[in-house]
Image (tube, helix red, strand yellow):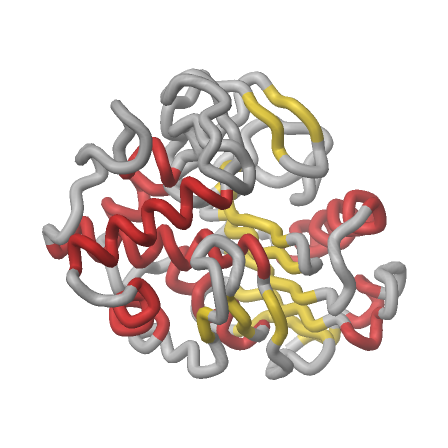
Length: 272
């Protein structure tokens, strides 16, 4: 297994960085203590999406059933297309007209699932996703949209699931990672406005956005999420490659500078 320490030398406080790369079967390389847990911020949204996907397969919810503001559905909420503001229930646009990144929308869909399942969302998510993937260090400590704590070991397990699904079907994952309402424009926080701004079901899709936090040479099909706590998870299904990181430093301009360089080095090292 490769020691990837040189790839994070330019990150702030590199001794606190933990990062791992996987091909979906084994760990290809890592740096840092991958067992140290911390807040993963908006990567929490990927775990919400996974719980909803399981619920869809179980028939507990339907992606196209009503949820959230009038006219909106579970699909709109997961795709940041319901019109909610970033962090409150103000409606900033009619549903289906703009990609407005929203913690509120994800929290609303989590509450909707809890209502349909007749159990707390945290319990459903743990039984449906966290425990089956062996994510023993992962726990919801607040808002479903941004309140999960985890470590790189557990996030690597999640990345492997997103390369080779086991808790839900491959066809379900394909739908989740296909652009939803693909023509919508919107802002990718920290990186600017894009038209279009492709998003799947709780998962950002790389598309042709530039600048971007993934590798400049990443395939357009690459998907994942980053978090304000300095975390990221990306999956390139065309290369069968994924990487996860916890920086130990909150997201800021430093990440826009070093993440694309680090991720391009990963792609270059492990691509066929």
